[in-house]
Length: 128
Image: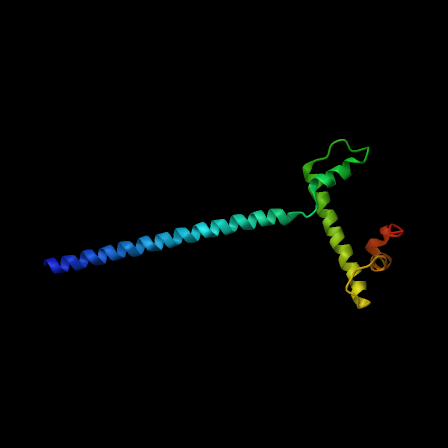
């Protein structure tokens, strides 16, 4: 081989190595970005897991004289249950708000939901 062919081969090899290095750098940057995105997503999911303050829920639970200690899992499940209940009650009340062609949920809408939804009958008289 003459010197010109060797130089061409060296240049092509250098270009290939540089190309692979750039690809690896891009892959590492993408992996790093994906990891950052995943961490942010997990943190956001943890934040949105509950909207009610666990400390306040625990305080309310411990107001019962029969409760001495309460497990963190029990507090979490109680808080999550309360959130789901509030969500359900709000949606039911909103149905009556929408029927009245109003945009603001009012006490009478909540009372209508309580009176008309069998699952909410236990709340009758609570708003008086």
